[in-house]
Length: 284
Image 1 (cartoon, rainbow, N blue to C red):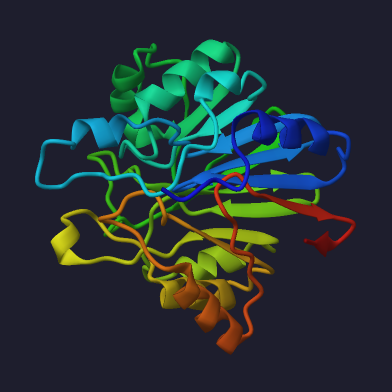
Image 2 (image 1 turned 90 degrees about the horizontal axis):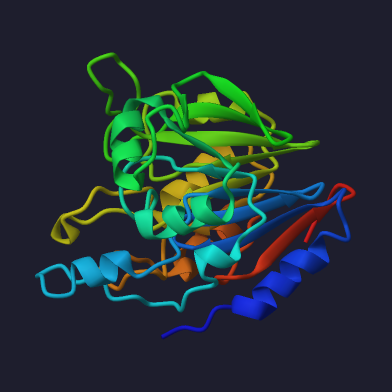
């Protein structure tokens, strides 16, 4: 199993240490599509999967979810979280074994989800329907000092409920002067890059695991497509995700790095538990 860059006590020490630089934006990859943002002492987590629930669920099936990289931290230890987003209903993005402990450790945290999955999410997490904040395409909200804007994601297609609300969303998060886009799971669709380009994005968090029929799961951007999206939407920096979690559904980030270098896209490839800091107009 691949080691996390930082985990457990070392990871939490890094989060605490970064708080001494409150005017900078700190971002950690938690694995799969999970990211932690810290700005001015506030913390937002996007799509955290910090359990082995899927490995356990599929252990005796013909689609085992064998973990590749060790877990960064137990969710119950994250008792300083202000906001959590879940981009859609799949368990590696809306995991009751992660979100349950997070909600218990942070009773006042704000949970932001697609409005289209409100009842599903509430039932899965054992919370009242009124507990989450639901958004749809083009809607925004403020939460704990962050501003979030919802955009559709296509996994594999643009899927809506009977009221026309999107079941899969990405979020543009305003963190002071910085704008960070988190895709959730998505493929390209007409107008995708144009919608993103309307925001002067400092960081784009994009999946690179692609799609393959034999996986029997919905697909995502490939490495090459992620580079194309980053360039067309004029992202200043792209950080890839959705790989190195499960053996059956992963990708080699070297292909993304090669394509990004060849086409002049700025990028950072993180390890699980590793931090990226943006400050004073410098990305490092």
